[in-house]
Image (cartoon, rainbow, N blue to C red; front, side):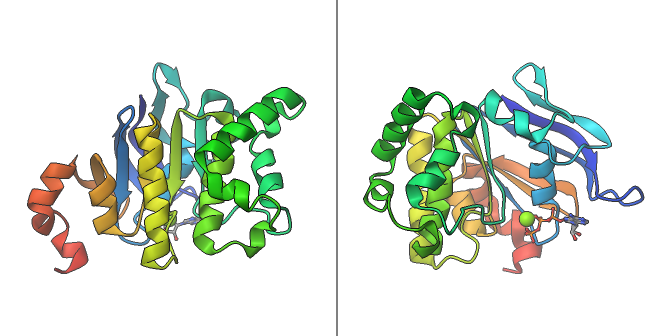
Length: 237
Ligand SMILES: Nc1ncnc2c1ncn2[C@@H]1O[C@H](COP(=O)(O)OP(=O)(O)OP(=O)(O)O)[C@@H](O)[C@H]1O
Ligand SMILES: [Mg+2]
C-alpha cells in the first residue's frame, strides 16, 4: 500500500538524519512509529508526504512512485497528512475549518455540502460546535477537528504525527478512540506517537526508530509479548 524503502534524508547536505529507514504500511491497519525525541519520526513523515526530498530511497503508493513528489499533490492521491504542529485556524469557526479541507474542490458546492454532511455524520460533536471559534475548542477537540477536516477529501490513508502530544490522558483517549473508529470504517492509518503504550495498544504493526535508523519492528502481539526487551533501553524499564 504505502511504503518507504531505504530512506536517506536530512536538512543539510552533510548530515543524514534518516539513515536507511524503511516502513511498510498495510491497508486498513494502524501502523505506529515510535522512538525517542529526535529519532527522525517527523522527518520520515515529511519525506513520505513530499515536504522533504530524500537523498536516496523510495516512497511507493501502490505502484506509484511518490519519491520527491510535491506535497500539495498528496490530497489528490487520497493521502491526508496531519503534521505535528497545530494546523487549525483559531479565528475561524469549526465549520469554516472543515470547509477548508475541501479546498481542492471548493468550486463544487454540491460536493462540499455532501462531504460536509458526511463529516458531520462521522463527527457529530463537530456539528454541535460548528459555529464556535476553533480556538475556543480544547486541545483534544482541535486535533479531532483537524482529523474531521482531513476527512473532507475521503482519504485512503491518514498520516498523523503526534496527535496526542500535550493532551491530558482522558482527552488523548478521545483522539485514540477517533483513530480506532476511523480504522474500523476502513481507513488506513500511519501514526507517530510519543505515548509508547498507546501506540502499541492501538497499532497493528509497530516500528521503532532510533537515531535515524530502524531499531525493531513487529506486530502488536510480538510487542506485547516482548515489549520489555524491545524497548527497554529507551524506556529504561
Ligand atoms: N527543519 C529542520 N531543520 C534542521 N534540522 C531539523 C529540522 N527538523 C528536525 N531537525 C532535526 O532532525 C532530527 C530529527 O528530528 P525529527 O523532528 O524528525 O524527530 P522526531 O523523532 O519527530 O522527534 P520528536 O519526538 O521530538 O517529535 C533532530 O536532530 C532535529 O533537530
Ligand atoms: Mg516529531
